[in-house]
Image 1 (spheres, helix red, strand yellow):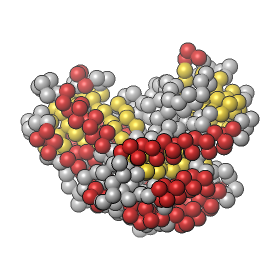
Image 2: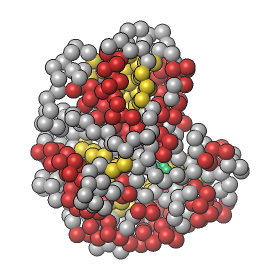
Image 3: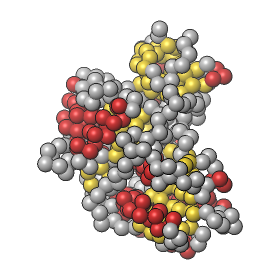
Image 4: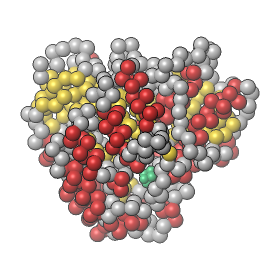
Length: 490
Ligand code: SF4
């Protein structure tokens, strides 16, 4: 995977982490660019007008592997538990209830969770061990076969059943499962435990109605269902009241949003309405499907300063032939048309993407088309992956698998090409000033770090203290391939 936004002031080396495939433990938010996030004005514990139940003395530990959707699902699961009187603890050894919320898009995450489960083989006595998320949906009751000490298996499409499942376990149930996919409901909670102190996530759409041939999401997260716009706006207002200024709207295909209420809003209507909530200064959204990316979204970004000037638009391949095999529902030309709209905007908008190399049957010529697409699109960053076959996908049994070694070679070539593009583009930004929301600090070096509206990470020095959570102007003094160094403009 290409690393992004990873340059500190002292060194222009790499230590960044992907936006898409993080790993987080509840209570310990991930830092930015190696800097440490600090509690902000005592932190924010929940965002709803609901008081957590009195503590029962029971504790939980929840570890998350996967994307921002998974991170936010975990925040909601933690809210459900907190609402039942559980409190979070820092280590699984201290917990009565140990949960792993796992993505199964990549094999690695699944392997990690089974390794974690293995640790409990002789130690689980008295604890409730559970598996949540896409892996739970994917493996289902087979998890009980592989790890008989597990008591709870609940897929992401069945999260609405979690309170009921936990109640069954509390009253002595030995094994409970939530594996239904046939739902038209989204996972709504009365209380959400917010672990990111500065950026609040709101899921606006769950599941996916596309059927990309390499992807397990339609199988693990179920069909697409959107939340009513009034529920989304009410949550945005509560978050603003709680002091959040940055909101990220989430969905596997966030821009496929269709308001199920009589208002019938499209994604862009919701985007504008969330940006208009008093107190909100930044609105982000991820992940967009190119097929549903319309010019009206670019127009909205141009017109509404609160909408961040960053679009993540996964292309996956530069070859129309491979895109067809992937069932991506657009051609290279149609995709590049959307890039042109974005590049033609009045505000410079940064663009990032996801790319898979080594899809079955990908020829040298197909791969060359992906490389040439990099040159045309000039992405600000990419997340790159080697194709890996996943169960319950139509690509699983496609002929002409690419040897692992060749996939690695293509990945290295791709990342090298993209790195050169980023170095050249980022150099041009030296001397420019950006507004940064400060989200981390390195106490030993008295450095601060934060993100611009276009999601660039800048680490910077400042004569000021207590900048966390502030919006400050920072001038870029040095550029690396993935992030920047700068100084506070006071
Ligand atoms: S659009 Fe394709 S890649 Fe994205 S979640 Fe749906 S099926 Fe998966």
